[in-house]
Length: 242
Image (cartoon, rainbow, N blue to C red):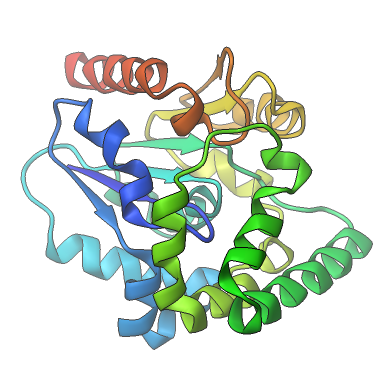
């Protein structure tokens, strides 16, 4: 069972084309709906605890694989480090292992709290245009229609920007060694920042591997969906064979 967590200001449908291309049972979780139904999930570690209980309730006899993209990868890393024995494998796409300096944390929190206010109050098309115009997304693919549908979840998105902010994530690098399952870490070749972070961090994983996706930026699964699907399925087949 592949459990997938989407990115910030996104929806499960963002991952649907990728999951449809993989011949494995999967579920794309709706993060904003989950936050609405589970008040205790408003912090990173709170999410990890609440999500693990929810995933346990839906588990079956198939291998349990956790997939997360960007914000979803941040949440996935907290789930993995909370209950590493519960998962058979994980896939992290455009993941950040955590900020190190206090100054960087403080600056990021100010930025994310400002985004929280904008996502709660601004004209939706304007704020989504500003979100997509960030340098990390420049020139990348985007699911415009799906992004418009996120407006119905404004309060939850705003909560996520604060409670799930990268500023509130501790540096998870020392905890990566506690994850015993195979972990595939994917980044896009045009996303130099996250590729550098991945290259430096993945070796701390006992069974980690880092793959670079050509022709892709931060939104790897949207820029090169066929290639990402091939990488994921090859990884899953290697796990099954082992």
